[in-house]
Every structure is written in C-alpha cells, then in structure tokens.
Image 1 (tube, rainbow, N blue to C red):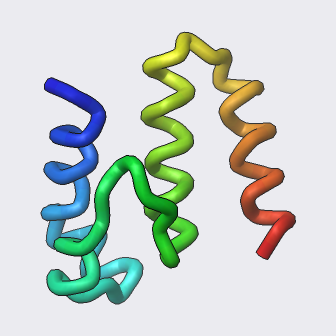
Image 2: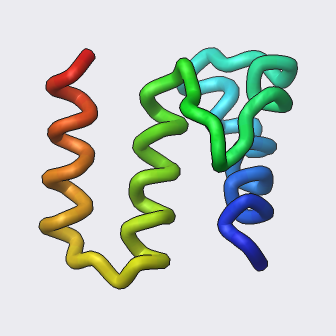
Length: 71
C-alpha cells in the first residue's frame, strides 16, 4: 500500500470526521502531495512520511512541534 492509499483510508475514518469535525466533502479533496488546510491532516502526513523515511520518533515529534508553532 502506498502512503497515498493509507492516507485515503485514514481520511475515511468516521472517528476522524467526528472528533475533528471535518466533513466528508472536505476530506475527499485531500491528497498526500498538496498541503492541507487542516493541521491534523498535515500531522498525519508528517508521521507517515517520517515512518517511511525511517526517522526516529523524536525527529518526527520535533517536526510536528514546528508545525504547531507556525500556526
């Protein structure tokens, strides 16, 4: 499974829609290569990319902290 396919599966999660109050329509517009307007989706992509690139959990966490700081 590619990262794009995994992201699409995650975006179909009813829990993601409910907890973060994201509509199905908004989530259907998302893809891995374009920047999302939703921080939670960018964080999910960061985790997936970090894992794919064999980054440590500390490195992934640092990237996520930078994303949050730039809000």
